[in-house]
Length: 354
Picture 1 (tube, rainbow, N blue to C red):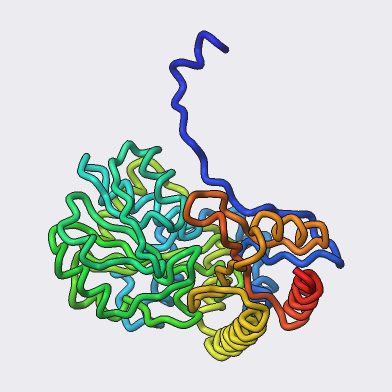
Picture 2: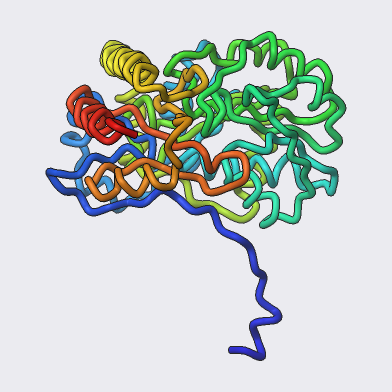
């Protein structure tokens, strides 16, 4: 093995949040999962799934789900690409649109998987520094040689840029693909999907893991001009013929169609997030205004790593990113009201006398 190791490719992998074993006394606020169960329609869809159907391959392009998503957003199915989670969709998009040897731009504080994919696929990149207010600077992205990718709202900051900001970037980069990763868009922002008819270089990626409570099913999709979607499909089927499972397709369709439940749980999370913001501000925490299902917080007197350890001792899991511009912050997922009560009670007691 030592003789062979020099021939093996080495990459630095993405590191997800800790996934502790479920426990009644554990509060898991570190992976931005939805604290509420999926739509009751999902349970019904699961009950209708027969084992007999599973011996057959699913639809190669997951047409039922593509058609359902397209109808929901007022698009045709030819403008939708589905995949096993938005991470798979994004990885395929990197291969389809960024693999021509020209540098891709993305923020320096953002979803860390972008850098992993760029390294894995030998794509050069430039990280554009966020401003002191942790916001992107649109002019920094003008004339990107190889393309642009960024989350909106950004992660881990939770800051959401308006559609006018996205249009500024699109108009300054008409010859390359601009990918807007909208994993958290349903918690406060306006989706750039509304711009697809205006910009044929825009690809919008979303996931069912957050606002639709289906992290365990791995469902994601991209929306864009027909030409972009066709290129994504060409890349996928050039090496990966595996589509989504029949079960994923069924429950994905059910989740999209139950819009009333989606709105109900979304509003609950937004309400709890706003309550968290008020309570944390009263405890002197500092944070940018979030339009995601998490807050990115720091305290002027408490080291974030120390606070992270104290929370962990109480089985309250949050996320700490030990990098130059993020090590002073903790990212805290918005949980249920009951979980939030426990978190706030602990922080109130911990900060007394400090």
